[in-house]
Image 1 (tube, rainbow, N blue to C red):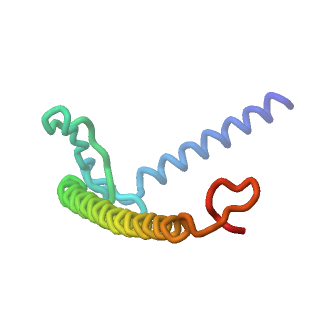
Image 2: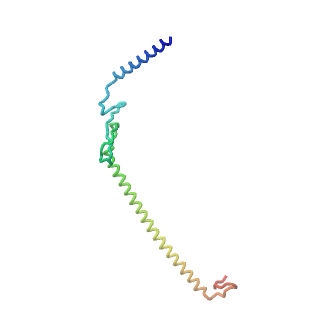
Image 3: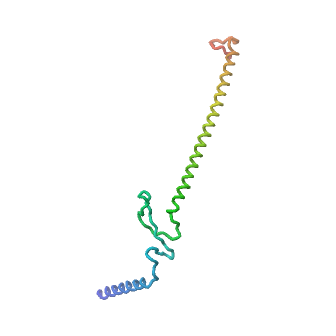
Length: 144
């Protein structure tokens, strides 16, 4: 009984394999090897270019036909990125210059303030120079 069951399973497996092989053989033909299609979407063969090796093809890939060719897009992308970096550098230098001018203004105002404080202190010393009698233990000429 065991032999008959295993033989039956083997026959069923063989029939299944033949049926699936027959189905694969009768399926619609695929596009040429250079342009496969998956789910109705066509693919194209694209070279992977190694710029460090003088632009030689380092490999190949299959990508959807609708995808733009990145080889032609890379220089444009690099150009845009360079322009953006240059603009950011210019903005940075403009900010540094604005900060420098602001620092110069603050330092000028601080110098003017220091000059006013020094003049005020000098006028206080001049006005109080000898007119006060001086208190006990006071040696400075200020009155309390």
